[in-house]
Each structure stands twice: as C-alpha cells, then as structure tokens.
Image 1: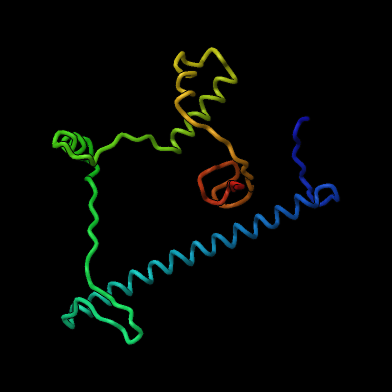
Image 2: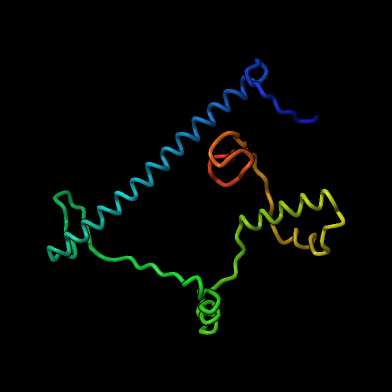
Length: 170
C-alpha cells in the first residue's frame, strides 16, 4: 500500500495522529527547555565552584565541613588534549612509546551515514556495489528505528542535524 502525505490532519480518521503530533511537539519543547535549564545550571555551578575555590584558597582552607555534615575539598581537575596540528605525530609517538592511549575507532554516525548512502546508491544502481560490500555487511550490525521529521522548525525542513528536526521513537 503506497504511503501518502496528508496536508490537513484534522479529519476524524487522523485525529489520533494529530493528537500524537501535538504531544510530540509539546514533549520536544519541554525537553529543549529542560536542556537549556541544565546548561544554565551547569554554568552557574561552575561559577560557584570557581568562587568557592578562590575563597577557600584566600582563607588557607583545603577542606571544610558544614554544620549539616557535608564536606568540601578544594582541588583541581586536569584536562589534556593533543594539538590538532600535531595529532598524527603525537599518535605515532604514543604508539612507538608503547602506550595504550591510541586506538583506532570508527565514528558510529559516520559509519551509519556510509551504510545508508551505500544502500541507497546500490538499490538505485546495483552495478555500483563494490565486491567487498556483502562481506562488509557481515562485519556490522544495522538496525533502524522510527523517526518523525517535523517541518518548519529550526534547522530547516529535511535536515537531520540534531537541531529539533527529527525525533526518534524508542
């Protein structure tokens, strides 16, 4: 049975879909609001930590306890990253030095896009399918889950950039 697009979802037959669409939009809006609140809360927390660490250092405290029993200790977190322009050299050296820091991985989103593109191309023109494709398909696990695209939202219609245009139903 061919699928069709219905432009006006107000008929009795499609009232369930219209209700679900409304609930989906409400849920997405609530999630976006909560994500924004979480980002703001994290920034506020970071600011408080900076002020608290400074004040503790000014008072010469490395730790203290509150009247209610919570204890707080001043310290630091270390973050390190390889300079972008030296990435290849650094990875080569780390391997030479016998560290276990460098691993070869395949980005899951890139792999998914590669498989999707390949499948579409080979369905349209089977002669384009490389000899190794069937063997490759045996090496991977592929699953699909339903998604609903919502037009007219940020990110533009027809994009899948994670900016509120596609919702996965789990």
